Amino acid sequence: MELRSLSASSFPPCYCVKRRLVLLTLVYLLSCDVKALQVIGGSVRVVLGGTAVLPCKLIDTAEPLHQISWQRKTREKVQTDNFYTIQTSGPVFVNGNDRRFQFIGSFKDNNGTLQLTNVLLKDEGVYTCIFTVFPSGNHKTEIPLTIFVLPSVSVKDEYPLEGKEERLLATCTAAGSRPPAEVSWITGSLGDKVRATRSSTQNGNDTTTTISSLLGVPTKEINRQKVRCVVKSEAPEISQDFTIQIYFPPVEAKIVERDQDTFECLTEANPDANVTWSRSDGPLPQSAEADGGKLKLQSISSDLNGLYQCEASNQYGKKHSQLYVHVPSGSCTVCWVIFGLALIASCVVAAVVYYFKFLRNEESPQRVPTSEPEEAPGEADTNI
Image 1 (cartoon, rainbow, N blue to C red):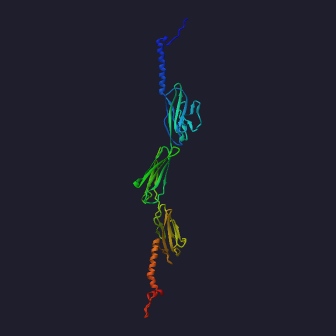
Image 2: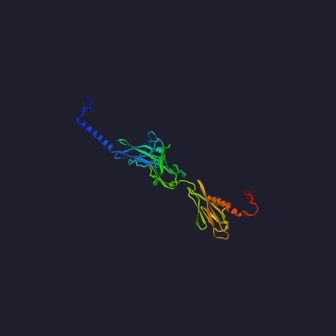
Image 3: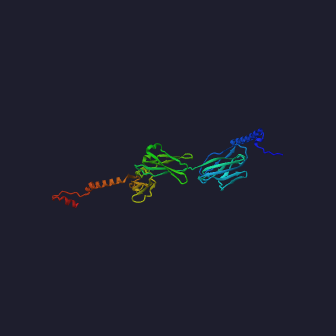
């Protein structure tokens, strides 16, 4: 028997055409299935310390799923790191065991979603979810994870003293935010009486601290005016109200009669002045009661007689005012005079002048004219 090798040309033309059609049909069907299937993911943004859900799902395929794999490339893992796989038997950690990750998807539903709790800045990066199916192979998607940090907002009083030159009034700080926060002031009716400056500092952990300073001339005109600090970041807008404080010592101490036998020492100061009452010749009598800025004369007697002083003071200075009380013997009526130190001095000077000008002349011996020669003026003055 004669044997001959068969070549492609040995087959009938119709056989070759049919074989090519079958192969093309299989390739077409397979490519159609691969094009139809897709892996759904998405980008994720989460606050520091929060919980991130990394979505990953394979859809539009009937191919059997063999394995789901997770890779990451983060701030901590700068090289691609295979860290998690999921099979029909369950999830398995690879290259370490980070219990913050939890599989919350469903293998039978082609859902490879992971949950990451207590997110840290080092977790930021790109996570890759890979589905391995047969026969088409691996299909993947990338999920970028971005971590943002909420700022800590505070407004600080800079304790400006009253003056005529521009001073720092207050500062508003948005500390440790990521990305950097925007800090501004709403000053209302103050207009150009105040202005703001802003500065930023990059922190070592890739967060930013932004400070906005409010400046102005510290006058009583802007004292106790309300402003608002506004901070805009990835978090909902944060605002804090602030009342401008201009600090100054007591302007004056003024004693007024509030009702019968009750007096009050009034003053203007910031911070509010502390008022104390005293008497020039010792402690207050039992019949005089001091309650803050008020002095009440409880029983009318001569024990009340004396010079009382109120002192209004804060850390920036003090002022005084005085009250003279006199109860005539056997009287139920209090006679009182309010005066300041300047008035006392004026009265003393006037009394001295009056005494030497009038009273002393009246008390001096009167000379009676005689026939004897008058003494020289110098000698007369000496004898007096």
